[in-house]
Image 1 (spheres, rainbow, N blue to C red):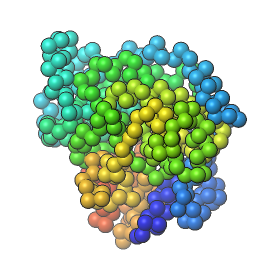
Image 2: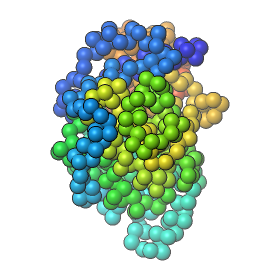
Image 3: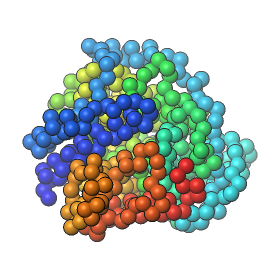
Image 4: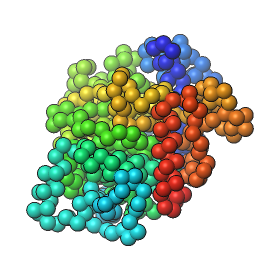
Length: 460
């Protein structure tokens, strides 16, 4: 498949998956379906093949435009500041819990029966040392060259089971590669309340967005605010100088090295974040108050991204401000839709001077990526965001995720995380894909199945 065809293929699959993702997220949080799949498919997807050379995916296909509007982007940013005044550390919940990971077996299966509560949710392997200044210094010396994994999630079943699998795989790799750069782990739970996983996953509970900042069903808008609260209350408690921002559907397949430096962050490049595209430059510039040069904008989102904690402190306030302002802005919201928060991160990073190097092999995205390597280099993360469908002959049949049952009855194979919006996959429910589906999706299913079989109380 040539570059042009691959690009169009990825665009089409992303459009279908992203639209369903938005509707799934909205429904999971009590909102009505954001749009009608058939209508958008008929009116937009059919034209993707002709437009792929210049960011052919139109984000407004996959997200409902917000009702809030401002004729001027600068005014939008300023009004967002007014709406967010006073929403600092005073809104952070005091709930935080960490479990003890010391002595975890290499396969990550054993979990201690007795969980214990400690002062913070940084690396649980060193929980016994909290409070001793000498031990803190020693821990931080050992944490040199490592990064802390930050997972943002809510308490919906859809993200709960994915978070469990993600943390299970992290523990397995950390146990198998103790000398790797994998450091501690914290789930930033932005639901404002504890959930059933507090004793299983190291967790800090933060609040949802303030009442005067409506998300309009766009749950991702809570993400920057969650990081802001974590920075204000817990960042000083971790031992590592660097963090990796991640999401529940990111599975480690190899321990990433420490790629960031104090001067340089690293992130995965997304084809649908295109700040240099002339079509989007006017919108980008309206929100570019610092007048950062065009070359400063990177095709990145906030995850996966690895950076120094000090760099994160610089980015997050502007990211939060822009995410809210761009969501409220009619033109920006219609142009960027479901990924407006990602665009906000890119624009914020450029304005505060945090440069990101893009690394393609940072993450795989099946079915677009088949092997476990990219550009001849071993990949570190697999992102299972797209639906995977194959007929009984092993032929890839994209876009049939709405007919999963029919596909299976015909002898085909199907996996889409959105099938498990209201519950976790049951033990024995998932099967491995056909051989020609590729190593990336096969490894994804193997990890999920292994976690399902190993974790206690599966289905929480």
